[in-house]
Amino acid sequence: MEVNNVKLEIVSGNATQFPTNHLIEIAFAGKSNVGKSSLINTLINRKALARTSSKPGKTQTINFYNVEDQLYFVDLPGYGYAKVSKEQREKWGEFIESYLHDRPPLKLILLLVDIRHAPSEYDQMMYEWMKHYGFPMIVVATKMDKLKKSQVNKHMAMVRKSLHMGQEDILIPFSAITKQGKEEIWDILDQTLSL
Image (tube, rainbow, N blue to C red; front, side):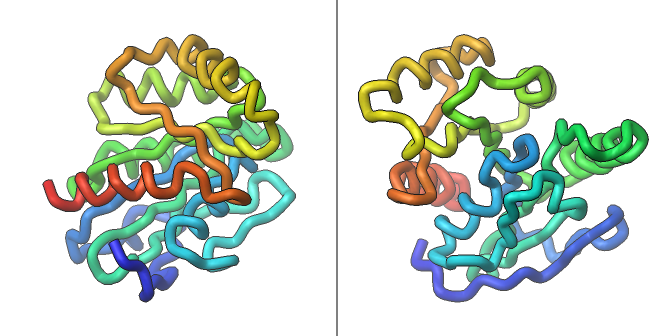
C-alpha cells in the first residue's frame, strides 16, 4: 500500500470510544518498550506519529491510527511493565483482552518480541492465549540491528522454540533502524486487506 495519509484518530481509555466505522483493524501487541510505536512509524513512513519513549509503560490507552481510510493500526498498551501497580496491570490486561475478544473488524495481530532475549513469560502467555482463541497472528522479532548478522538465525530459533511456534507460524525479524522486515510485513498486511 502507498501510505501518504495517516492520522491518530482515536485515543481510547474504554470500549465506548472504539471506532464504529468497520474499517479493518491490525493490532500491535507486545510488552512495554519492545518497539510497537517504532514499528508503526516505520510502516507508515513517519518519524514520530506514534509516540515512542524510552520510558516503558508510556502507552496506557488503545490508540487507533487511520491509515489511508482503509484500515486502522491499533497500538495496544504494553504488558508486563513492572513499575505500575498490580491493580493497574490487571486493568490494562482486562482492557486489552476485551478489545481482542470483542472486535469483529480485528483481522490480524502483530505480536512483538525483542529478538535479543528469550520471550518473557508474558510473551509466552500472550502467544498461547492468541493461539488458543485462533487469532490470525504474526510474530515480529524487533531490534534486529542490535545483533550481529551471524547471531540472527540463532536468536530467531530461540524465539520459535520459546514460543513453541509451529513451522507454519510466521516470524519476521525487524529493525526500525535499517527497515529490514518492513516489506515482508506489508506483504502480509496487503494480503489481509485483500481478503
